[in-house]
Image (tube, each protein chain N blue to C red):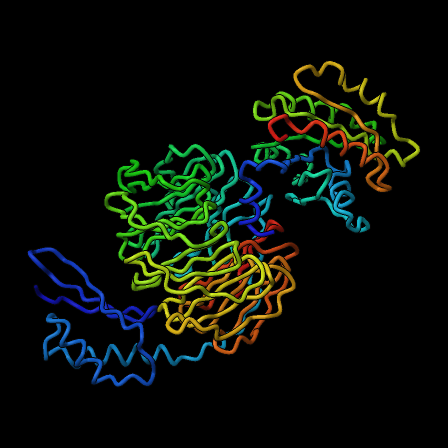
Length: 415
Length: 182
């Protein structure tokens, strides 16, 4: 094994080692999820050296330098004020989901008008309209970090894979017998997973366009799915009250997370794949050990349905959004609620952290999106302008652009 | 509402839940009717650019009513919403005689849709509060409703504005919910 070079990853903080083994270039990552400005760098480097034989004494100074750069990034103040930059008006019916590529240069929108549109974020110009679906385009995704392919999932029961550059449709994935309502690329960008109202999920090979496996076992509609970071596990959440953990390689079900008393609304792995958080219509969130499938904690506090839940990039915090009009922030370690985000005048249907973990973004039926400080629960900014409820909201990777998609047929870029 | 709620309303409705599709030309009064059903304020209603969904309780049923925008350019998207429809309500502006032919054509096309085959249809002859409104019988004849043989149907005169006749129509809806729902 010979070390070639280091790559820096800001969010979540980490150092990627590129090395050669048996003539093949491989990578492995050293996650520094607990890194903060107070971390003793010399002690940390010693720990890394002990654990990682690829890092020899001669590399020490380099590693120190990289960690200092990560620390520098961490203490950059994020007091960015967002303003409405562009209103994207080309859709003639309500939007569904929206997404960015990693660099944030392009974004995509799905709509009831059966198209997915690709936009230039900087100019607001419509680059492409992806036409071909025969019903609502509900789920959209880019294969980040590469960002050269788009997957669209439709109520027409198919999923299509497109080229971001040309708009060419590479494949139409057929096989589901009801609406496709969720999809995801794995981080390795070799597979697309689709979840359907037909109670199954399917994995598709991006290269040859073939179905790899069907994940069967749920007894009601699948409405969300999510890969883990390493891509060897995928979770599916269903109206049957359970979340299933599947082995991606074999399609075998590893665990069924049983405990919620109503349909699942959302579920996600943390970065290091050790925990799964789930949100449910039963008004609670639950934390599960991803390896054993055992419940670790129940996060209570909301007094209406939990509609969305997510980890921050490092997995230290959990944010929950509810039909009760509030959001909450929990510490993933202590499981204690550390902040309550109050102010929305309607249910909150989407919630996410910025990649830095220093801001939370919420989307609500009150037609506003809001930015919050996750530590204090203080509302930092209200993004006003949509004339109907907001269905979706996302940050770009840098955390300095926000995209909101609404029932008012527009998508807005805030920067 | 949110996307998740839309998915929940999308799945085949359980017993005692009825999925009602509200269609008709633009300015027929669909959204006013929807708000009248939900006992909401009807003073500021603008053309629907997409859809509105409301759930109302009636005679032991939960009626999930989907009001779909009727402007010409978005009519081709009506079929986005056909899945699992239990009852079709078609709304006509009884005072807009110039568009009787157009509305009749749209209705005829809907009745030919495979996904709506056999679905009971209620036609609301709306805007009866206007002096120029054509009576329901005249509309029924003009639209050749008597030739509908593949489903149960009913025409009901009403005013979504005053609420008159609306409840009579909904009583018919509850009576004619498919046998499987009972």
